[in-house]
Image (cartoon, rainbow over all chains, first blue to last red; front, side, top):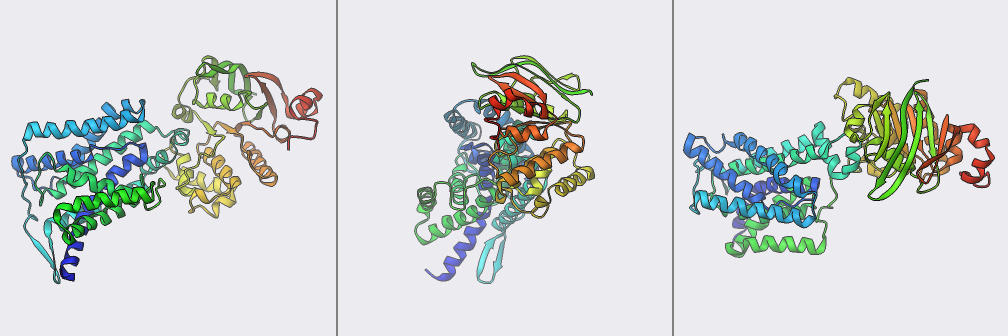
Length: 290
Length: 242
C-alpha cells in the first residue's frame, strides 16, 4: 500500500469526519445540557435523508437546497420530541430516559421500514458526480460540500452558543440548572430549544450526505456509533471536543478500513470508543461542560 | 417607612419535615436586615421560600403589597427579587463578563445593561481586571463578589443574600460586608442570612433571630448586640462570632 493511498484515505476520512463532527455536536448538546443520551439520533438523520429524497423526487429540490427546509422541519421534530416524550420521562428514573430514546429509535426505524420499505434510494444533486483534484488527491464534490457544509453548520452553532443570549443560557443550564433558574432562565424552555437544535443538526447532516449516500431505514447506524465514539473522544457533553472527536473518528473509520478491511471499519471505531471509556471514563478531551 | 417585603405566618416544609413554622418578618424600603439563628433554624429555607424555590404551605408573602407566595423564581425575578444562594452558583466555564450578563437575563439586552455591568465592575474592581477570565479561576471572596454583582444586574428591589461570607477569611469577610453596605447605600433593600452573627448585627439596620422555624427575637442591630440574653444565646460568651 502506498503513502498516496493512505493520504487519500485520510482526506476521505476527514470529509466523512466533518459530517460525524456535526452529528457528534448534535448528540453532545443534548448530553451536555440534559444528561440524556439520544439513541434515536441516527434515526432523525435517516428521516432527514428521506425528507431530502422526497423533496427531490416530488418537487425536484436539490438536496443542498433542502438544507434549510430540513433544518426547520427537524427543529420542530426535536421540540415536539422533547415536549411529548422527554419532558415527561425526565421526572422518572434515568432508565426511563434511556429506554424512551431507545424506544424512539425502534419506532422511527421501523416506521420508516413500514412506510418506505428497505429499498435504497438516492437523491441526485448538482454536486453528486463531480471530483475535485488536489494534486494527486481526489475528493468527490458531494463529500467536499458535505464537509464544508458540516463545518459551516457547526461553526454557526458554536457562534450561537458563544455569543447569543439564548446560547449563553443553554451553557448556563448545562453547568448548573438551579443557579440558572435563580437568574430567571427557564430550563424547560431551554431543553426544548436544545432538542430542536440537536435535531436540526441531524437535518442539515441528512441533507448534506444525501447527494452521495443511499438512504434506507438502516442508514442511521452509519452515523450513530461513530457519533457516540466522537462524543466520548471529545469529552461527554463537551460540544467543542465533540467536533474534534468527529474529525478523528472520521479518519479512524475510513483510513482504518483502508489499512485493514472495509468490513471491520466500524469495529475499529468501536475499539476506539471502548479504549477511550477504559482509559478516560469522562472522555478524552476533558469531559467538563462548556 | 413603607414595607417592601412582608412575610406573615409562613409555614414551609421539605416533604413531611416542617422547617418554617409560622415565621413573620417585615422589611422596610432601603433596609439591611439580617436573619440569624443556629443551624437548622430555617434561615436558608426562609430565603428559598421568598425566592420561590420552595412554596409556602401556609401564610402569605407580599412584595410592595402584592402577594407573591408560591410564584416560581423567574416570575419573582421579574418582580425584582434577586437571590444569591448559599452554595457557589457561578457558571465556572463561563467568563466573569458572561456570568454578569446572565444576571440581567430577564432584562432586555440594551445599553442600560452594559452600563450596569460597568457599574458593578466599578464596585468590584478585582473582577474588572479579570472580566475575560473564566469564573473557575476566582478565589472564594471573588466568587462571592461576582455572585453579589450578578444579583445586582437585575436592578433588584430586594436582594436576598444567603451566607455571603461563609468560608471566607476575616479580611475578605470584612471586604464583603463593606460591599454589602455600599449596595445598601445605593438604596437596594437587602435581606441577609448570616452565621457570623456579631458582624451581621454590626452592619445591619435590624435583625431577626430564628429558632426551630420561628422568629424568636427581633430588633435593631445595635440593640441586639447589647442585649445580654441575645449575647448569651446566640453570640456565645460575648466575644465569639467572628
